[in-house]
Length: 248
Image 1 (cartoon, rainbow, N blue to C red):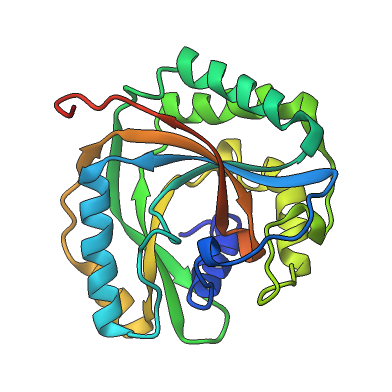
Image 2: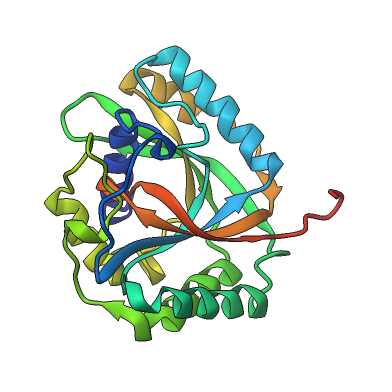
């Protein structure tokens, strides 16, 4: 049985991504006293290869879906929070210490299966590669939540998000979800995954029924993003690049 709390924002993010223009070609609004952020891991080439292959399959089945590209990078969200903009540098410093202490650069991760769920009554399914929630990964999320807690605001407005003149609105479910991320998507409710696309119900059920060969991967980097509408990671604010064994 799928945990609906875990998928509630996932499906909204995937469907919204179908209509999001690249942030690099837009102008953001003035900064707010509070910023809505996403802290996540960027996967290595192994996961990216699998994610793009799955994305290509989904696009063949449903061409109106979105393409994994520079504006929709495969990533594994660890937390979403409202933080005080004046303390963003403190957030970066706190996260830096956690990534180092928890050895995020060498953490072994395992992809276990395709998963997802229907988005309302649209007939479409969000599709992800589910990642095993290991004790180390759960500890990383827990430590990050504790580290940024002193700089966290209880709520935020649309001004906390990355918006553009073409896409000026932030919906209420997005505002509410970030405020309620703890506990709705943390701890026992943490569902680590990499989103790969969206498709029809028929193709989704076909895809998840196929044998899935689990594979190991690592994070190539960690990033802090400013969130956009529906929880999309729209603007990279900070990045930590990791040295991957076997690569220069």
